[in-house]
Image (cartoon, rainbow, N blue to C red):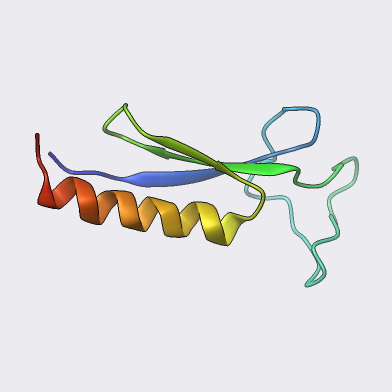
Length: 75
């Protein structure tokens, strides 16, 4: 089974922050009406794994770790 992990950004109110919303280097939203990113959730296509995180980098790292572990243990 192939595992693909995606990281989705969410606004503080729980709505998805679209990938086309741009941010400054200090993480301030540039898109009009965007309230900023409140959390990130990494999800695998295997359907049994998700990882919430306060930062995108940590969510992505946990996704990489999951893919490595899952490829070693296919069951």
